[in-house]
Image (cartoon, rainbow, N blue to C red; front, side, top):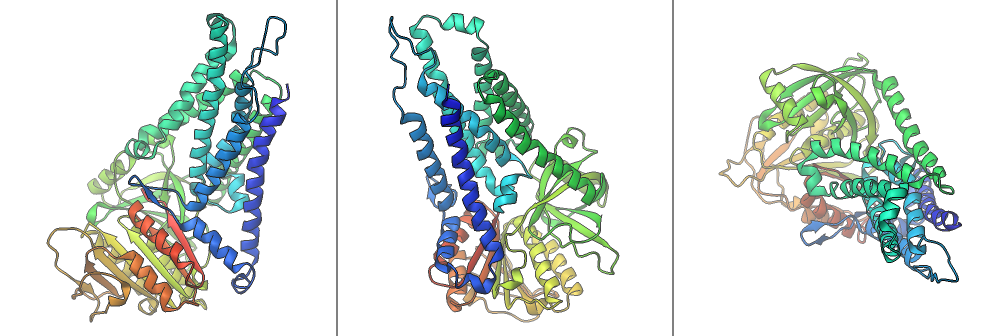
Length: 549
C-alpha cells in the first residue's frame, strides 16, 4: 500500500529534478551578457551546445541530438532500475501465507506509468509550464513526449502481463474479467495507448497527417477517460489526474484567451498562388510586436468544413513592424507548399480565385529562436531548403529592419536550395520588395540560390556583375539575370554545407556566428554536424534548426 508513494513519487522526482536543472541553465543563459559568457563557463557552454547540436545517422534515420539521447538513456536506466531492481517480481504465496493477488512488479510499473501522465500531457501542449521554465519551445519537446509515451507503453505491458500470468495460474482469469472493472477498462486503455504510440511513428504520421491528427485527439480522450476508470480511485491515483488536468487545461485556456486578446476572434487571410506551386497567405494584423521572426502560429480556417475543427501550424515569414507608413498594421505572411489535405485545398482555392480571402482564427505565436536579436553576433548564416526558404525571409527582413537602426550585423549570408526553378521567381520578387523598403539591403545581406534539379539548367545571376563564391564551399558558376535590389547569385548543384560552415568558422576564429537552418532532414543533419564540430575550433557558434515538413 506504499507503492504509489515509493515508485510514483520517485518518478515525479526524476522529472521535476530534470526540469529544475534545465530551468537553472535557462535563467543563467538569459542573465549572462554576451561578454560575460566568454568568461563564465565558456567551455561548459560550448560542450553543452555540442551535445545539443550533434546527431547521427543510424540505419538511414537521423537520430535526435546527442544530448537528447543521453537524457533519454538516463531516464531509461532510472526507470528500468525502479521497475526491475526490487525483488521479488511475484509474491511467494502459499497455502499458509498470502501476500495478496497483485504481483509487485505489476504494481510498481503501474504507478510509475500513472506518475508519467501529467508530464506526458504537459509535453504535448503548445503552451506549457515546461517551456515557460526551461525556454525549450514546445515543438522541441515533442521528442520527449514521444519517448515518455514509449516508456508508458512498456510500463503498461509490464503492468498487464503479470496479472494475466498470475490469474491464469490460479484459474481465475475468466472470473476476474466478468467481475472486475480493472480488466475491461485495462484492455480498452491498452488498445488506445498502443494506437497513440504506434500511429505517431514519424513516416506514418507525415504520410497520413490529417487522419493522424483527428484520430490522435479521439484516442487521447479515450485513453485518459479509461485510465481514470481503470485506477478507480485507488490510493492517491486521483491526485495524478488532478495534476494532469491542471498542467494541461490551464495553459490551454491561457493560450486560447491570449489568442483572443492579441489577434481577436476572427481575421481575414488572403491567398495568393506563387510560381513553383507555393501559396502565400497574408493576414493584416493590428499593432506590432505580436510575433518574432522564426516563430509559428496555429491557423484555424473557419470556412473549410471539417478543417475548421483543428488548427494547423505555419511558420511566420515576416516582421511585425507596424506597417510601412506607420499605419499600425503588420502583415503576417505565411508560405506553404501544398502536400495534401488542408494545404491542397488552400492551393486549389488560390489557383481558382487568386487573391481570395477566408476567415481564420490565429493562436500563438509559439517557438522561435532562443536568441531574440541576431545582430548581436558578428556573422549570421541563414540556410533554407525547399519551402524552408520562406522561413528564412522573415529572418532576412528582421536583420534589415535592425540594420536601419543602430544594430547591424557585420556579415550576413543566405544560402538557399530548391529543386523547383520557378520558386526562384517569387523569392526574387520578395527580395526586390525588401530591397526597395530597406535601401541598405545589398550592403547587409548576400543571397545565393542553388538550383538542385537534375534537368538542363541555364545559369543565371540576379546581380549587375558577377560575384565570386569559391570561398563559400559551393559548386556552380555565375551568369547574369535581370537587375534586383539584393545581390542574389543563382547556381547549379547542391551547396556543400559542411565546407561552407567550416570556412565561415575558421576564417575568424574569435568571432561569434549564428547559423539558422530550415530544410529537409538531410540538410539539417549536415548543418548540425558541422556546427557541432565548429564548437571545438572557433568562438561562439549558435545553431537553430527549424522543424521542416
